[in-house]
Image 1 (spheres, rainbow, N blue to C red):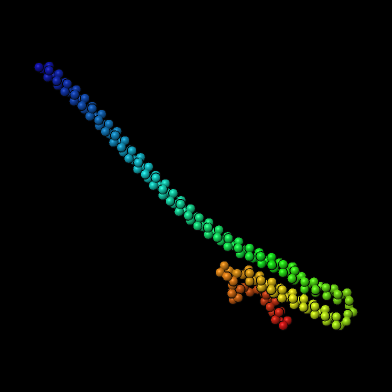
Image 2 (image 1 turned 180 degrees about the horizontal axis):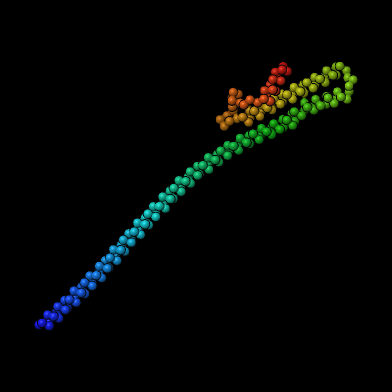
Length: 188
């Protein structure tokens, strides 16, 4: 009986040790599962945070792209407006160049022709001289009117603002035009 008791006590001791070891193993397994759940939870949280950051970055980038698109559109419209203005000004310059090369050339050729005739024939009748002076005067007046008209074309077409033509009060002082106007009034 003593032996049996001793044997049973030893068996109980071993069972207790086994249960203690089994308890430690279960605690370790539970700890590992808890750690795995924590790491998995942290991984999910990190994934969600990264997704939120990427979404936020994409929204900021889209907003920035919209701002840039508006700026590009505005600048394109400005360039198109300036292109239309420059095209119109180029047409006016071509008209001005035509006027100065053709319209002004005719009265100038008349004046030069009469001067050559006067130089070639010094002994002319008084009547012929009067006619030649009249031709020179008419040609000079025609040139004067053409020059004034040319200046008016340039002043009107190149001083236009984006809202329309400038009023005469807002036009800058043009000394050439003022001098031509004064000469025109003196001739009358």
